[in-house]
Image (tube, rainbow, N blue to C red; front, side, top):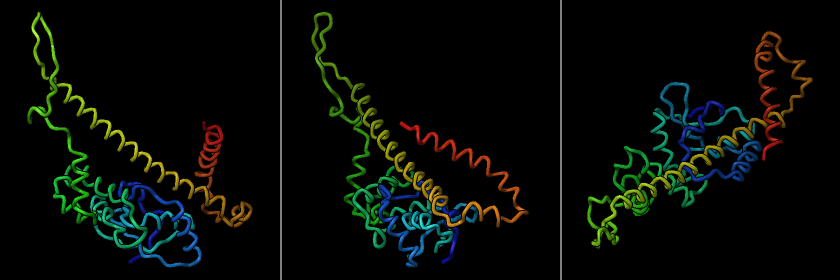
Length: 258
């Protein structure tokens, strides 16, 4: 177990397995952390480079940011981002904030939508996600494409056609295929919207944590100028103007948002 920098942990790499983040829990954790409460270490994966993918402890890391903690206890496991995802889908099954049914569904869907992992059996995916294999089977059927026209008459729709005085039944296979494609496209669109919503939640929480550091810091501007180490003043010159410009533009756009 190690103490690592909160800012070094990657939160937006697609390893978050929950259906949504609970902001109230983050607030409660943050208050407890500021009061000195000890939490279990988070779990991160690293392949030896600079990236550290969070696999377990998203609420704790968000809370640490909110509490303005620079370090957090962590267990570092050697592995790639995909290994972090596999660990994440089964996390919180026996500890931490209790998983909802939506959380379990999202965990299973992460594996079923992966080209490699969807090839695993229902029982293996269930083991990885710590859920029932019946849930995996139900969700797999939801994702299954409609039957191919080549598989039998069940995919064919007959309609009555009259041409040149002759009436006959025409099988409209093409329409069945197109409707199946449309259904899959709708499902993929809905999932993309859910993923984008989740990404924006993470982004917003990170931005709030940054803004909160300015609003709650005990360092006054006067003290910051008086005590700043002069030999690194050039760093302030390099970052101050673009930083102020960014905050000014953000405030203007925020006030004028529709």
